[in-house]
Image (cartoon, rainbow, N blue to C red; front, top):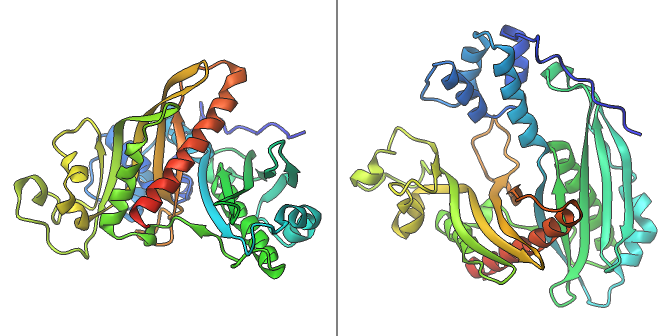
Length: 373
């Protein structure tokens, strides 16, 4: 049984200087969260880089309430489930990959190591679902967060679902993660399975195919995101765009000399835009501007109906995996998360979530094929 996490005393903690700097420089706190906290204290700065913002906030005294808000934002962002998918190509639709993986699973994952201060709360285990899919589950316990002043012990679950798809010629790998640790472990387990399957002649390659930032030009990437708004089925249909986030591509040349866009030149690198901001929504509507920026994140609202369960859900799509200290999104993987669900009966919530994930994943596959046929 997992021991309860030992909580830091938020109500009495007042941090500043070196003690606060350790937390702010960690990957658990984003650049935006630091900038937002500075604004709440009346400090406005043009740069969001940690090299500029961390010294400023470290020189301030955070009240217990300000510190709690900062940490809670970080924990919610870190522990929310994110989903991504990749595919292995099978050498034959008759390849018995399930039996091979099931019989050799322990030896396949045997050499996988965890980072410092990490242990398995539950070891990776394999089971076969009633529908024949292969499910791998585990959880990682982070033993010492004290150096980051968050929680001294937290447990993060992870999961990988393997199923045959693509007219029987692919293994679809659907991964869910709840932290950077489970993200790395998902990749390690998937990589070990790929290496094993390739050695057995089951798959054509060791590495699975994922949707990566580098798969697209700037133009194609925006079209890919927008294609996700074309979903219109009885079970799931698009309603509206929420927020989106773009980054100016400094290598794309000078912006057009037009009043509604030239304000970005030399002044803006990253911008978060609300879907209700009609003055800037043209950035997603007019293709002539696509070459000048990266679209890296978008939230959308969808209406769902599964039997008696109906309502609206919020989905965030993003290219993830970039460290907060690195400006490059090259190599990042496309994933999504369910940011908002209505109140549902406890017995229905997991089923609805599973159905939404399945429909969204199908929409992502269709959008990718539409943009990169």
